Length: 330
Image (cartoon, rainbow, N blue to C red; front, top):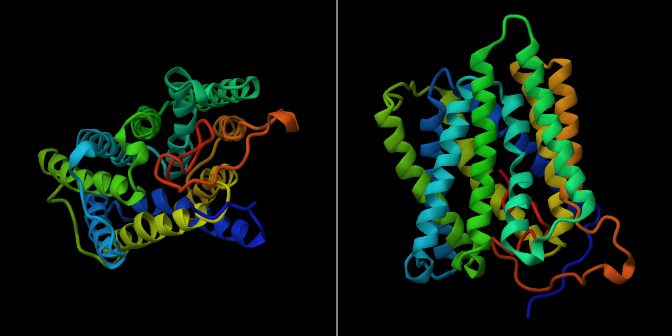
């Protein structure tokens, strides 16, 4: 039996704030290096690097290295959807700002909550969570409306924003596939490895077919972006996240992830000088408020209704029992 989880203390909270700040740099770093290397190629190469590091980590821990068997169909499916998610991210960053991508990508928990509400009886949404979904969608409408009503509308920006929302839908789809398939009981490392390998292969293919594979310059900025994403974001942050899941309640940790879009917008403004209009600012606040409500299923429950903390091992699916909680940091 695994040891029981504890409430998040000051140490855990501090680590989560640092992780969210690092995650907030993700889209900013991709956008910053875009003049030297196409975003799609950056993500493909970083996925390959992360997959290699994860394989070495699994061998060092003597974990079973098995991508076949009963999990193979679901693994191939979730890997393909994961790759599609990052096609939307990479293509979206060609047209929209890193700040917009940070907010719209994190609408994923909303779509996850809606899908799991329909598919899993244990994931039924409560009244305040429906309010959160309504607020989030109102925020999306407000953010888009600002651009639609603006004189001299930037259609490229709106197209990039749409791709960012589609990336959020794809991210939600990976969570739903995992929760409703054989991967629900698979080790988290195996689930992630399916996604990383598929992303590397499919994104390299997409980069070649779209003519973006040959558009790169091996500058320090490009190398720095790949190393930061591959070593820090997709590998080190992942390990830190699941290390925390073994110690603290997953539902409490997941709430901290909603700070990531705030860091993303802040870094986008400070580093890339992304413009922020009032409509987008208002929409972002509504989205984040809605996410906070959806990600807290215990809100409004009496003590008698409070579920006991889960003590089972934290896998890729069980890591976030709250409806709509992100399965992995992004």
